[in-house]
Image (cartoon, rainbow, N blue to C red; front, top):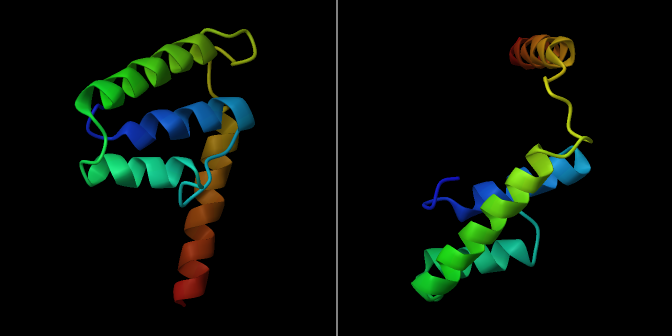
Length: 91
């Protein structure tokens, strides 16, 4: 996990537990991440949060609920639909 982007760990946890990512990051995580960016959190606290998120991501990754391989067909279909939708709206 990138220590420069603590939100990435939070979003990864959300993705692996709910199947989606909420954008923008909802409260209270959003306020917490902003406080990190503004330098309002001690480094030790931020590093602990990163370590905790990394441990949770590892736990979720290794869970039997997560398939060994992504659903590539679904991803390909989604990407195709997204491109078609984008170009249809552009005219």
